[in-house]
Length: 139
Image 1 (cartoon, rainbow, N blue to C red):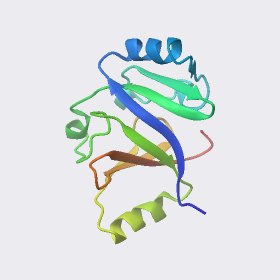
Image 2 (tube, rainbow, N blue to C red):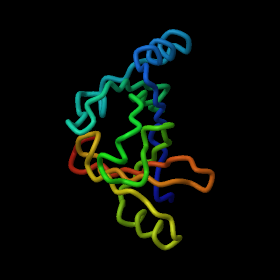
Image 3 (cartoon, one colour):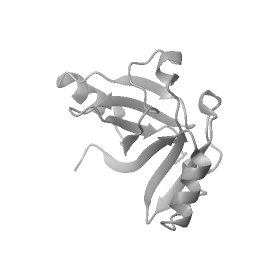
């Protein structure tokens, strides 16, 4: 069994409404109204985000933020080019495995979405990867 399960892809833009209209109109992907989309954004990241659902695969359209890493004193900024995201039930094991393999990561804690403890790191090609664990009963 895998340590993580694919959860979503995050695309960033300075024009979230334009991106939302494109994905909803051109590709006919529905807006998601449950889970993270149900008004669970935190005050630390209150910028516009649209959550879409394409047959169970989430797409998060987030406002680009070139300074979030700097503001939160983190080396990895997940809101420059976007990222892919995985969910785990054992974030401690994921972090231990990253450390074992010498992969540095930024531990954002519960930051942008309530009850999601998020870490971010780079894969060998420089893509940002998120792994999060739901804390409590929120999904």
